[in-house]
Length: 357
Image (cartoon, one colour):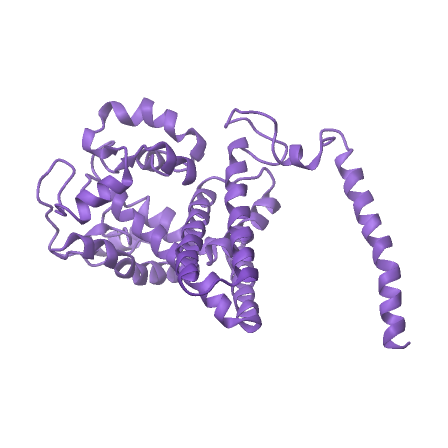
């Protein structure tokens, strides 16, 4: 058969196959319990954030889907329009911020699944990984099992005591680079020693898709890929690690509620999916982000030091890192550090404790 004949056959068959696919989808939506238009199937018409939907576990996660969709639209727009000069300098940090919001979605996802069905959550993790720029299954060990379990202790690879410069702004800037090597080493060891086969399989899929996409885009147009994908996603990665300095530096990890700093500004929490209520997140990591404000008011605020509930993150950043720029505890005292601060094993801490004994 000639090449022309092949394409003729393809174009004759494609509409038929497409129609069969549409009929199958419609038939699926007509089954009991799913007789809804597609939008309503994804999101129930309810204003209650905790109400479960047909697909979503919490209706508030329409905002998570909106964040990922907005990021994809921004990247596609930048790729097509290809802004240059001053406009490109403006676009890159905007894309970086959008990708950071996707990193926030990644953080929420590893704590509380978005969908009812397991395969949907696995697929969603791939979408989030593409938006954040890194496999989010690799986010789970160091964050959930090191940082949450051993907050600010030597087993916490993200503890803020790893940076000790006199200039506090330099501490903030250096923090992501100071903690990243320990995160990478710990995650790699977890994968060798404790990672389940299901976790490894999901990680392999995410890794293949994320880096396959980056390589494909790089081959298509390396300049656009660097400007509109790689650099913004690097900004997002540094930002999601660096924000921990805001949450925990100068706090009291041994106190029931003063272990974390909280930012309650409505705009920040609308955009960042209530991540400003960080103390409540540490108290109950599996709690859905939409439930954090109410739980914070009921369980955290009554015993919280007033300095650990800040309304504006930007105002706090100015006072802490610019003027007067002093590094202090939440109650205004000088921060003291332990003499020995090398990482301790968080992957198998029971074995380390046995050896120490």
